[in-house]
Image (cartoon, rainbow, N blue to C red; front, side, top):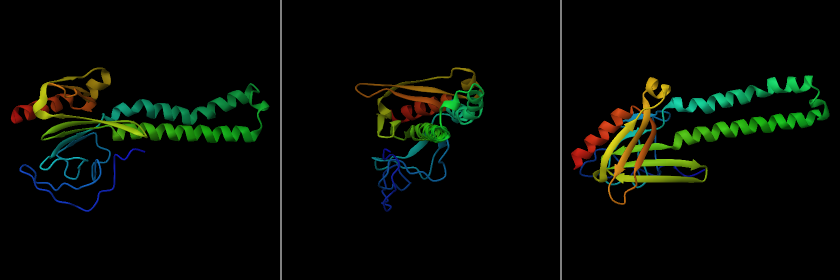
Length: 212
């Protein structure tokens, strides 16, 4: 598993011009009370790797929890699938050609596969985070257990911010994508399926104007 969350070392308090919160060394992201939140404003106990002196985390975002429904439903159906499939196969006498121990082994591997699917799906949601600080926008993409990609953009390099809300669920639960267009060689940033995209876009714009 990639070392996104690492146990923090002893506290090393750093004070910057704008910072009032202590920054702890070690660990990409340290969380306390907001472990499963999708939208956290002004988090007090969240710090990340390479956080600069005086850099303050203003918002921590994840994809809206509704976006997890598809894999939760799939996992739920997979859990109960053998209850429906096995009696049907038994009625059709398909299972009679397999010894009972083979059927048991199949069931064990089936539920191990379900557990792995749920575990990886949860990690994909949990570790894909978007961070807005008083200086930068940070997009952490957790691609698999062995690889993560981190994109950053200085706020003063932001040229334009737009957002998009699409679909029935997006309108009902107020989540969507926030697109950040940057200048020069800076990579464009996209916050995908985050809660309150209009609010997020507004705050990035306000921060951009304040710095510029």
